[in-house]
Image 1 (tube, rainbow, N blue to C red):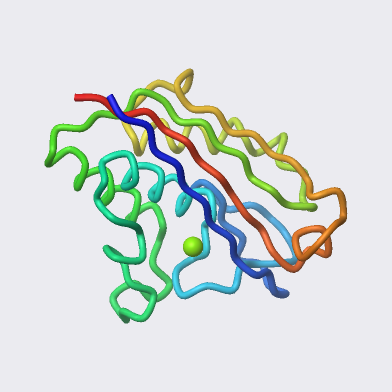
Image 2: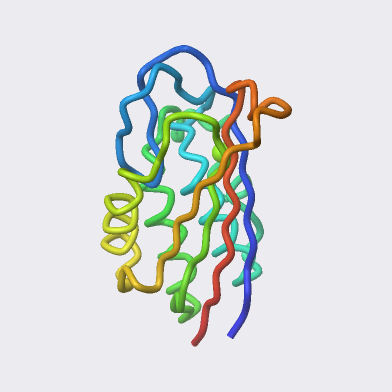
Length: 156
Ligand code: MG
């Protein structure tokens, strides 16, 4: 078995296309991104790729490639999982932290877990989604950015 770690951050701008963990969340800001800017899924993909030592999300899904413009991050996660399964890796568990000031994610986390469990084909009990604010400090505290961290254990 092997451990992996991932991180992602995106700037926020005015808008209403706010996706996190593959689900739509009503908000008055959206990520600035080539894809849909789903920091949680991007951090998860980097953790998975890191655990398998398969480089990183930017290597497999370059942000200057028109193919991935406005890409649905769910697609990127599915492709990442298929890269791992080609080498017979399975996911044991996933632990994540999202950092943002608003909106409160408490009511959305159950849906994010269900969605990720479906995509990743692992039980919800093996997926942890945590959220915290940046205590109003820095770019995240000013609501100019959103970030996520992910750790995972994979096994064959
Ligand atoms: Mg990203």
